[in-house]
Amino acid sequence: MSSSDTGVAQSGFEALRLGRSTQFIVGRHLHFWDSKNIKKHGEFMGITLLLLDDKNSVIHGFIPAARATHYRI
Image 1 (cartoon, rainbow, N blue to C red):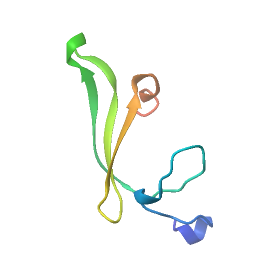
Image 2 (cartoon, rainbow, N blue to C red; image 1 turned 45 degrees about the horizontal axis):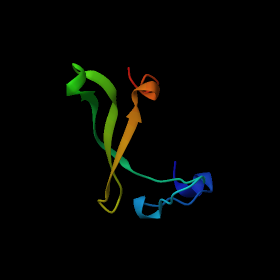
Image 3 (tube, rainbow, N blue to C red; image 1 turned 120 degrees about the vertical axis):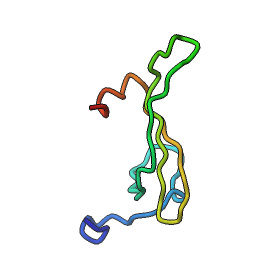
């Protein structure tokens, strides 16, 4: 589905702004892994991920453990 199909303009990570708003950002999932606290016997803290946009900009993301169950298989 392209941006012309949805009627929403696509943009890269440089267009992200702080605050509440509706934004449609296109990126690729580069890598993800479970984050664990080694000081607490490997307690699961969440999912860490790296995303890549069409201009090769990388952004770091984190999904906390309380929400991670929604994304884990």
